Amino acid sequence: MEENSPQSHRGQKEIYKHEIQNEYPILIVGIGNTYRSDDAVGLCVAQHLKRLAFDSVYVIEESGDGVTLMESWKNADTVILIDAVHSGAQPGTIHRFDVHTQTIPTKFFHYSTHAIGVAEAIELARALKQLPKNLIVYGIEGKCFEAGIGISLEVEKAVVEVMMRVKQDIHNCSPRKYTEYH
Amino acid sequence: MKSRTIKVDYLARVEGEGALYVKIKDDTVVDIKFKIFEPPRFFEAFLRGRTFHEAPDITARICGICPVAYQMSSVHAMEDAFAVKVDGQLRALRRLIYCGEWIESHVLHVYMLHAPDFLGYPDAIQMAKDHPDIVHRGLQLKKIGNEIVALIGGREIHPINVRVGGFYKVPAKQELSLLAERLKWARDAALETVRWTATLNFPDFEQDYEFVALRHPEEYPFNEGRLVSNKGLDISVHDYDNHFTEEHVQHSNALHSVHKGRGSYFVGPLARYNLNFDKLSPLAQETARSVGLSDVCRNPFQSIIIRSVEVLYACDEALRIIEQYEKPDKPAIEIQPHAAVGFGCTEAPRGILYHRYRIDDEGVILDAKIVPPTSQNQKTIENDLWQFIPQHIKLPNDQLTLQCEQAIRNYDPCISCATHFLKLKIERE
Image 1 (cartoon, one colour):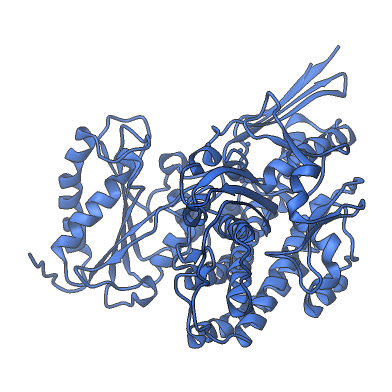
Image 2 (tube, chains in turn yellow, green):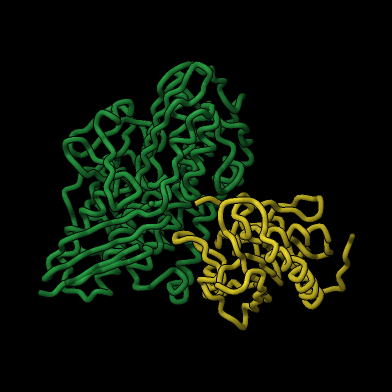
């Protein structure tokens, strides 16, 4: 089992996870492994969103370890997760789940036979009543999950679309009028 | 003639990819294969040509659950080769980071992977619906382990601060003191964990195992000691290859380790406990006795209690180390490489982890040998099933399958490590 070290940034300023307080009530988590081809697509979306540096939005990258995920969203009101999925749909297909109204199919976000992944973390948090008020999950259908760096063309096309939809979610969920800095 | 097979294609709640295949003919077990099909990972081969100081970071990548064990066995092997002794607070910090790894690895297994078997749940998520407070306690306890590893090792998974000779950077006393209050909570939670696991129902199952673990004159073993067993083994780590050998079996991508002339042996928490009970802290000893354990436990199903006792010990030991900590002047001892062979064996959460390296005058690795705990326990796991299944042969296939899986999980096998290895199939004719 190999996992990547998560990097936490907001704009140029590094903030550690335990410092997240409600000053960033919206948390965006890009999930993936840079060295597993299309698995990196969630990280890619997060990296683009970081550059936009929204006010009251905190963007982090994670490897997908469920316990770490549950810990990271502890203080956020709204959490948006973006991860690659392998469900058999056309590469680049965007799946969107509102966790409070839908159950996530465990096989969608298969992580490990041992550790708990995204779907398990969500269901565990639901059982423990530790879900954030709003939790939206984007799954981007990947094509290749082999060892290597680089995202397939079909999958990369979904990045911009997911970004647009996340921006709309941020707008809908923002407790105060949000500002975007370019 | 009636035959049936029990087959689990992907064993759940174990690390890596493995399977179990059991064939039963007229209520007699005729074949058992504990298969490891996770592909071989060739770590030993690609360590060749790398320099000695790269070994801790390369080998840590073998496992995301026990990277500290790989780092520790490799640094000790290198220091053995170059006749360097790391002592004092640097040595204490090594024990502290190992405490962190034991806590996170053991707590994950006790609460998330093994407890659902005893309580009749398919997984920890279903268990959490009925026992939210217990699962919540497990998650909080695991987190303390992660925090220790992150503080000493630079990050939670695959720490990057360990080097041959010591560390790249050592923490200030105040940084460690901040952990102490939380560790006191963890120690209480670990004590509750021992009491809770002791209330579970255990199948009556004991075998005449040869337990093998490190033993150190002054402490419960993490990093150093002689290799001892309950059947008279007492050797230096240097003599490991003279006493143990690895065999290839056709159904597994992981080599089976055997004690030459004797066969299978048992490593891990039970072995450590049975051979080192007297070295546990007074609190850990007292707690073990209070829940009805004696100083020897031969039932692998009770490994869940022993793991919990070791978590309690690790919290206690971490607090002791933090209390006595003074920041060392230098984070590491300088190393001058020369041609040599070095041996290292430390106690990974799942048992002894052996490393041997041959180094040239420039400090380049000429060859490497790594024997992880799961390779060493594989044969014992199969032997357990040969004994366990006949006792439960009348059970319907689905129940028998679950019990076989539970018997495998007694060992918390780490398949990724073993292939540097689980599926399950029971066939009845």
